[in-house]
Image 1 (tube, helix red, strand yellow):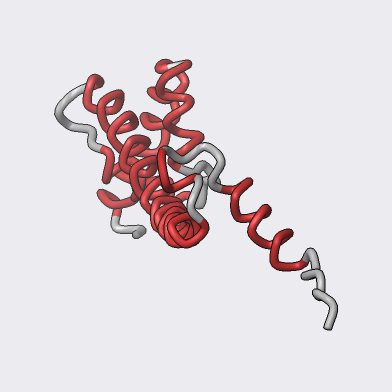
Image 2 (cartoon, rainbow, N blue to C red):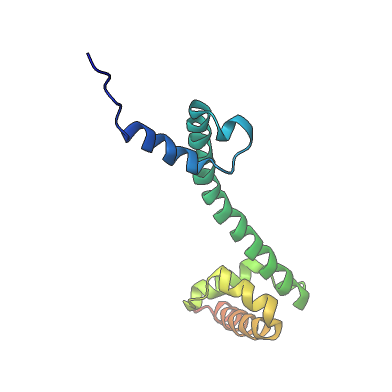
Length: 128
């Protein structure tokens, strides 16, 4: 009986996996079994850290906004600003507010003064 040559499908699959792990160190980029384990581990980590990244950026934005708002005085705070934005239905998210806080503090001061003044006036008159 003559020898049957194997097809290219398994080799192509392994090559694809090797290309994914080409930047890994040691056996993690050379041995097929180890490569597949490390690929699974890397994909799990990247999936988990995408959610983590969203969390950390949101925390960073909140910290930046709060720092700039509190420079104005003890009377103002981040929570009052966000509450005022929500009440006036202003469509500025935390990312944009943080960019404004870094690039143009005076603009953020004007926004916060208008919002807090409006909300304070409505609360004192009993409209809200």
